Each structure stands twice: as structure tokens, then as C-alpha cells.
Image 1: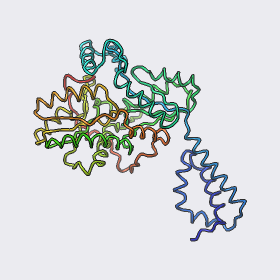
Image 2: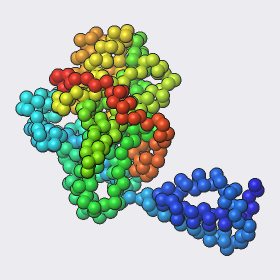
Image 3: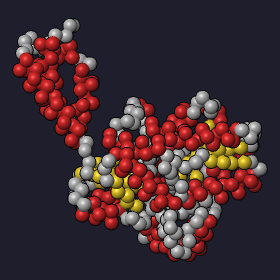
Image 4: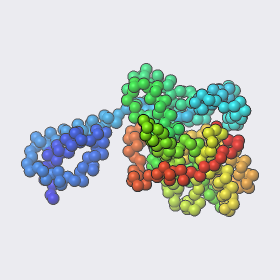
Amino acid sequence: MSFRIGDLGYFLLGFADEKLGLREKLNAIHDEVAASQSEGRVLAAYEVSNADQIAAAMAVAAAVKQQAEAAERFDAILLLAHGTPDVLSEMDAYLKLVTGGRGVPPHVVHELQERYAEIGLRDEPTAEGPHLTKWTLLQGELLSKRIGLPVYVGMRNWKPFIADTVDEMKAAGVKKLRAICLAPQNSRTSVGLYRRALETAADGAFDIDFVAGWSEHPLLVRAFAETMRTALEAARATGAKTAVLFTAHSVPCRTIQSKPSEHHGMMLATDADTYAIECKATAQRIAAELDDVLPESDVYFCFQSQGLSGGPWIGPSVEDTLAALRDGGYTHVVLQPVGFLCDHVEILYDIDIAFQKTAAELGIAISRAASLNDSPTLIAALADLSRRGTRSLPVHAASQISTAAEVIATLAPVEEPAPAQV
């Protein structure tokens, strides 16, 4: 069917009216692209037009676009992170927050103080601050410069606490907020707690758009791939047979399994948590980004930093996987944790110190890709999330979503090793 300029006004009027009446305003511009694919059917309903109608149509279409853009404007961005103590004497209070008030035995507090001391935490505050806090605040500063909006940082388990940051935003007059959880893989036991803490502190003061589950964002994947490429090239330069081992922080099996519950006499079930699946998806996409230098046969995945509480944690563990890779003939393993966006204790101690000792005992060498920290590509990913939310993420067909039984089957639970991270 031919397109007549005289039909343009009616097409745009009909199109704009459809979007204003039937679609969410946030998706107006996106829907315009899809709707344009069927313009022949829409135009067929109109036979006459004039310049006034065309002008009116243009005005309505512009209003739709303006409304969609306005709906995506925010007064500020909030980055949410885990938090870490500023000095060694705060460890006991910090762990009580991490464990929801239960706390841990004194010997565990002491053990963790020793680990943090090995990565630079002291009895007195240092000028640069603890690693996690330092890098997260810097990420906020770089993001603010990139997008031209105020960017706040709130920590769930230490300063700056989410509640304190919320008070600061209230005082600044923030009304519309986009919050980005700096744990890219979604889970009930981490991301869900961030959301709850934010909503409780805000108490309706903000219109909050909460970004969770961005584990497959193309720029996040690219940022990880950039550092892995450098590390892999360095390892291969030694002539060693090299494997790549992607890791993610382990969680208790019970926290991600489906849970039956009774409600008014009916048995209901909470779906299994997708955390483990999202971790593996991140690793798979990084490997795909490196397929020119990394054959699939050299790619492996496991979970690290299994804890001491709550029964079995998901695995396999790094320790067991390193032993298996040694037995498979590898002499060098390059690790990359895919759930951490900056240096902190699970990288600087668990990988750089504890796993190095394990590897030495096994007779193999290990190295790791540099943490993202102030990576420009990571900041670009955060900027895209700030502007567009999760619209850059790949869309998976419903048939690709694993069932609860499939989720549990892929986890390979292992008992916690000792000593281990809380």
C-alpha cells in the first residue's frame, strides 16, 4: 500500500490517541516503533486529511514524546550497596546488622577482624576509607558527572546508612528517585532487603523506581570482559594451560529454594529464587564476549565464600573446583567474581589471600581479573540504567525460564567448609 502525505495527520492522531489511552506513558516512544510496523492497516481507516490536521497530529505526537520523557526524569539517583565497617572495633556491631541482630560468636568476630586487617582495615580510620565504601562513593561521583544528576549512596549494613541517606534526600527536596542496587544479580535475601530498607525509610516520601536484576546488561558484561581479556592474556603469556573460573558469592540453599506456606487453608509456594541462574547468565555472556580468545571448553563456574550459618550453602566451592581443574591438567586458573563491582573483603582476602594459599597447596597458579572499581564501561552501564532502567536488558522467552525444580537441580549444594565467610 502506498503512503500519501495527506494521510500522515490521521495516522499520527490515531497513533497518539492509542498511546495516550491504552498504553503506559513510560512506553509511549518504544510502542511507536512497534506500532509503525502496522501503519498500512491504520492508514486504511482514513481517506482525507489537511494541513491543520497534520499540524495537530504533530503536536499530539510531540506531547506524547514529552510526557514519556518527563516520566523518565528523576530528581536523583540512589546507589545501594552492602556496607563495610570503617575500623576494626566496629566489626561486632557490623555483623549484628548483617545477621539481622543475631550476631556471631566472639571467635568469628576476631577471625574476621584479622581478615579485614590483612586487607588494610585499622583501629583508626584511614584517609582513603575501607575499600567498598571508597569505591562505591567514587562510582557515585563519576556517575553524577556522567548524567548531570545528584547521585546518592546508601549502605544497608553500615555508613552511610540507607535511612540517613534518605533523610538527606528528603531535606534536598527529592520527590522522584531511581534506585540502583549494586548487586547485579537479583535475589530475595540481598536485593529484596535493600528494597525493603529503602521503602521503609522513605515511608512514601518519594516516587521510587527500583532497578534490580541487571546481570545481563550489555555494558556490565563488556566491563567484565575487558578486565578478563587483559588477565587472560597475561596468564597465557606464561605458557601455562589456563582455565577461566567465574565465581559468585554463595548463599544458603534454603534462601533460594521454593517455600510452601499455608494461607487461609490453602497451600501456596514461593517460586525458587533466580539468583544462581542470573549469576551463571552473567558468566555465560562474558564468555561469549570473549569467544575470539576463550574456547568454551576452558570456561568454568562455581560459588565462593560459603558461610558458617544456615545449613548447606550452594556450590560447588572454589576450593573443590580448583582441585578438579588441577586434576584436569590445568596449571593456571584466572578467576573473576561476577557479582562484585569493586574491591572488598571477598575479593581482596578470599581470592587474593585464601584461594592463593589453596592453589599453592594444590600446585597450580591462580590470578584474577581486576575489579571493575572506576571502570568507565561500568559507569556507562550505570548511566544507562539511570536513564533507561532495565530497557537495555535482553528479553527472554517464557519457555527459557527455569522451573523451581530445575533451579534446585542446578545448584549442587555443598556443606560449608571451615574456616569460611559469614
